[in-house]
Structures are given as C-alpha cells and as structure tokens.
Length: 202
Figure 1 (cartoon, one colour):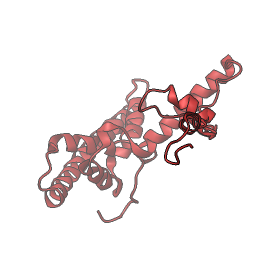
Figure 2: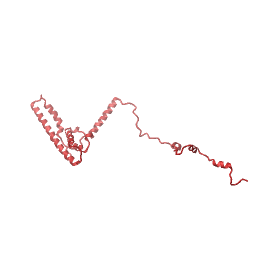
Figure 3: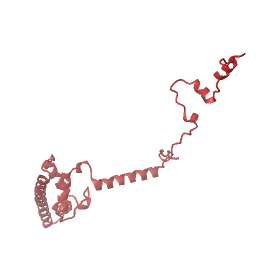
Figure 4: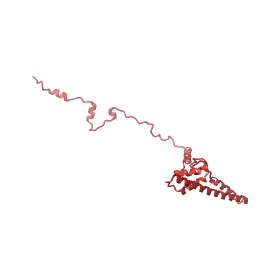
C-alpha cells in the first residue's frame, strides 16, 4: 500500500520544471545591471523636431553683382549704426555730456570751414586789395570766435563734470578737445547725431 506522505519521483520532476517565457529566456543570458532599450520595452524613440536645425547651404554661389550689393548693404548698415551710436571714443557719460553741451548751442566753429573757403578764395593774388584785406579780417574774426567759443564750452563742461561726476577718471583735456572738434563740425555731419535741440537746458 503506497504511503500517503511520500510523493512519486515523476511528480517531483513536474513541479521543479516551470514554464519560462521568451523574455525571461533572453534576460537570463544578460549580465547583471543590464538596462533594456526602449525598443525591447516596446517604446518608440521620438524624433527631433527640424525647426531648430540650421538651414542648408545655398544651392548656388552668389554672383559678383549680388556679392557687391551685399557688401554695400553691410557698409550702409554699419555707417547708419555709427551715425546713431558712434564709436569706442564716444562711450561714457562724460562724453555724452560734452556732446550735449556742444549740441545745445550755436557755435562759431560750424562756420569755420565755410569761412576758411571764402578766405582762401579772397586771398588770391588776382583779387583786388580790398577783397584780400576783408578776407584776412574775416579769417582773424573766425579764429578769434573759435577760441572764445572753445573757452566757454570748456568752462561749462568742466563745471558740469565736477558737479555730476565728481569721481570721474576722464581727463578734462581730452574731453575739451573732443568737444571743440565737435563744435567745428557741421551739425548735420556730427556723429553720434545730436540728441538735444539748440537752446535746450543741459
């Protein structure tokens, strides 16, 4: 009579063998710490959007006329920017103050080059003596006017810089020369362009 507490060898073999799925079979041969890919997990990798990619190279090279036009446009844009903002020598609040002082007043220097042209023509030996004399007088008056105007501009700049920028490291001599050179330039040719009108209080 078979014992109730003993099992047959065939039953023990059937219990020890368990079904293994294909995923478990493939995982059995992997090393420890292996991370399955998204493809193995059934997930699709999203593609990158093409909006931020660089545009492709032009299909054809520029012609000489197109390249010349491109350079001309770049020069015009650079000149317009310099006209608005100026260059490195125009940076700083003291320089801006000096420009505003000059631009807020009428200066004798704006007539300097025009007067110099008249003097040059009038001083010709072919002109009558009275014309040459008047040309020399005009030249002297222009020179005197520029000197007086430069002194007044320099004194005002010195006063305003000491009041508004007491800790400024800008050399006053360089600032005076900068303002005087601007004062003998035609208003429409000044760069950076004037930001104040004539008669405005600085």
